[in-house]
Length: 463
Image (cartoon, rainbow, N blue to C red; front, side, top):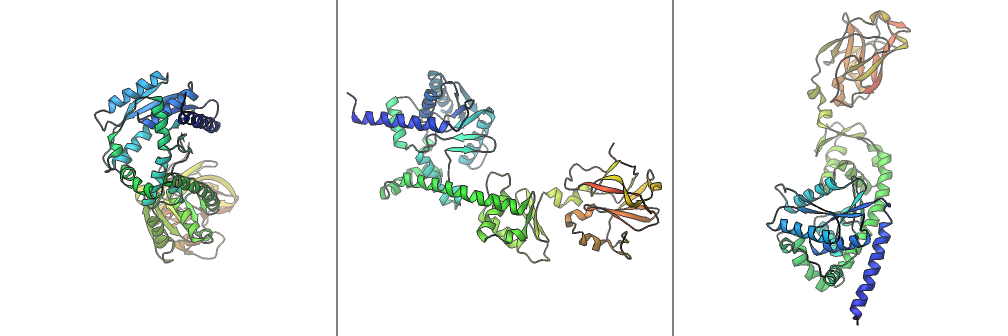
């Protein structure tokens, strides 16, 4: 006769299977599952469960980090168990780079997962409740915010793939009971008890102390992670609205930013700096951006370098620039003088952007078309008599009035013929100069696209 404990185990195991099937309804019928299996008790139980519930949709992968002599044997154990369950198995060796061993191993592991994931597959991992609680505590010790304390999500939709963690609400004790009941063989990794590693220290040294004082600590801490996930989702909605209000590509409107609370400003700046990177910048880096650039003196030319970008304030906007954009004058090495011919309907690429030659109510005489004209790089101190304006005035003043960004001013070139100024090419368009060549119904270069992309510029006529 079965014991009461066995009957109880069978009931909750059936309930758990039902929950897993309910979670799987988030996916399509075409979805397939790639199980990340290390050979440990948790992932071997996961492999068993998935083979039982989704026998034709499941395969597994063992990542051999090659950090221990027995790692090959562990892979063979996983493969043997997978074959017994009639589940396809892949073994992938990876190399670990020098540095933080835990971090590098994790990075290599996830890279391998992504390489093997098919377009209709999701990655299934055996993280459980204690893993969740440990993750939250470790992130708390590192000073993480709401997003960090949200820890791991049960269904984690990332940019390139999705992770499913069906065991996340399952305790370590429940997994152990179930595994012992099934009686399969599994790997015991000695590094899991090596307190040299933070997670192992947390598990071996800290965990028992906390649980002795707070017996329900594991479930309580895990519950906190789900509350943080709710908070992160709400904050995400607020952040999305602030982002749409203040950010256009690589520009941030400082007037609109100032209308937000200090906390929302910090969140927006943090998300904007992060961009497509995996992690947000530190609190200190966000503070430096505010103190050293945004709140710098109005006449200060403040620049802060963070990761691959330079952050620069101009007027009431903050710009995120690459090195090539900020120092384009050094990168481009624009010649002082070049010669060009202009033709009706043709386009020309100059330093300030791409221009098309079109007819205008007032423009340059047609006799200049097809004639060799010169483009002179701005040197400083030039004066211009703009068409429709009275008298000559410094070109520098015209540039300032047009609010041309300082790092784009090197692209300004002056169009001349026989030492007569015909106009100026700028990132804001072509400025027609008053001269004997200005006529009714003439032609002018019209700006098609500006000089945001410095890397692909060539200064020649389009064919």
